[in-house]
Amino acid sequence: MSEIRNVSVKDVEEAIYKLALDAAYHIPEDVLEAEKKAYEKEKSEVAKKVLETIFQNIEVSSKEEFPLCQDTGLGVIFMEVGQDVHFVDGYVVDAINNGVERAYKDGYLRKSSCNPLTRENYGNNLPAIVHTFVVPGDKVRLIFDAKGGGSESMSKVQMMKPADGREGIVQTVVDWMIQAGPNPCPPTIVGVGIGADFERCAVMAKHATLRKVGEPSPDPVLADMEQEILTKINNSGIGPAGLGGLTTALAVHIEMEPCHIATLPLAINTACHVNRHKEIEL
Amino acid sequence: MAEYRLTTPLSDEDIIKLKAGDTVYLSGVLYTARDAAHMRMVKALEEGKELPFDVKGQVIYYVGPSPARPGKPIGSAGPTTSYRMNPFAPKLIALGQKGMIGKGKMSDEVKEACAKYKACYFASIGGAAAVVGSSVKKAEIIAYPELGPEAVRRLEVENMPLFVCFDSYGNDLYEIAKKEWANKL
Ligand code: SF4
Image (cartoon, rainbow over all chains, first blue to last red):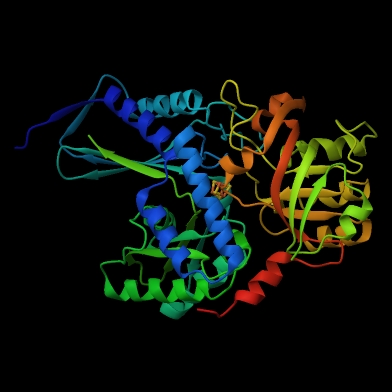
């Protein structure tokens, strides 16, 4: 029998606190690298100017600890818990919420959570959205994703018909991203979930936006689809900030799982060009 | 594509020289409002009450800034997605509002109101919020403080970089730019 490992939720709170601040001010390196590569290939003068402004923003944010974007998002946490972990010193979800609340207060980050109907702002950015996965082992892996409203609003789940197949999926994603146009702050990272069921494909789509930018899917069929969708989106001409150019998306990432013989669930979730996410293993 | 330096309030003469795609460095006073504030302002109009500020000649910035650090006028302050203001903008433009600043598409009704009443929709770069925020020199909340980031603020800005998106001739920069760069890979 494997040993149980105690993990203090105080360590989880501290980790979330640091990840949230880090995500708000410092762009992930892979995102910046992808943007620099896009800059080299970009032919539109306006697009180059927009990308230069984005680089300048990244520099100012990091140096002066100004949030990369004023919309510092809701805290979305992907938590992988090893099955041999035993949380001690409190309830782990409370600890995550405490970490988020403290970071958003201490870091001068915007609080964006509100009552869906009255739109009253709760003033603490709570609750965080926590997706928990039980995995083998005795570690806890936390991914913190600061998800802004502009890019999140350009998401959808569509229950496709099985006969729509590969072509139908490609077309739906391309059409959706072209229709979204400048709204999700391009250049974007497009996350796509295919299969599983209604709610799980949505989680896959969001999780896919967190993959290292531009790393192709290990499944060659999906890698091929990613490339095809990316080319079609970038041929739209929308460009950085929607002001025209060759760089509308930096990458398309697809995750896929088996589905029911009668269904073909498809989900699209978009990450904007700041794509703020940081992770740690405890 | 021309470049202009303009100071608010804006006049019809300022507006008619602007064409979609021009760059504008805007200085002067701006007012901030997002959906929640717009809902209240339009409700106030319907009830025959006064607006928190006179919109004549003014430019409204669609933004919900992050909190200011001590000693700074404001935090990060980039544009929010504008389509949420589609139902409200034409009403305020009819009252003399001369411009709005945001990101993303707005409706044909807004475009038509810009042409009819001589106003512009200015696009700013979403997510370049620390840079855009640094053009804000002063900020004060003038209405609806309980809305937090969505309260109405009076900003003083210097040379805020903007692109003319809807001009007063029915043009749309997003559509023009997209056409120009389509199928170029
Ligand atoms: S979509 Fe992203 S970059 Fe654009 S305003 Fe929202 S959080 Fe900021």
